Length: 90
Image (cartoon, rainbow, N blue to C red; front, side, top):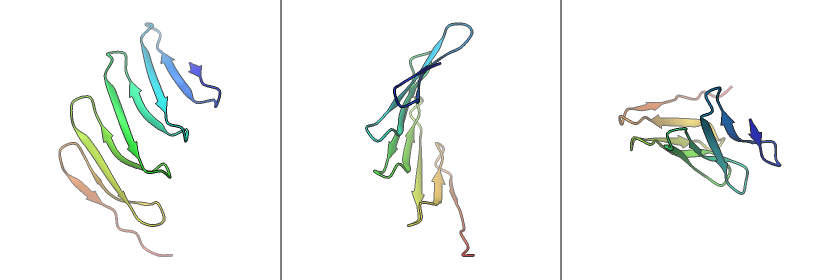
């Protein structure tokens, strides 16, 4: 494993010598992962770090919505299927 100065993993190398690379934004949020086949998954985030969209190398995307408390309200997967989460007050 290789870390940056903020102790975040920047590179992982498996036992066969293949590496996966991790990239972070200026707020130290993970924004991209590039695998050993040079395929990149990207994460689009809100300024507070919540993930809005994950774009996969195969062209599919996942999206997320949140409530005012930062809890996930819905997730739409790469096939367009949406899961909505019900939140109850305590």
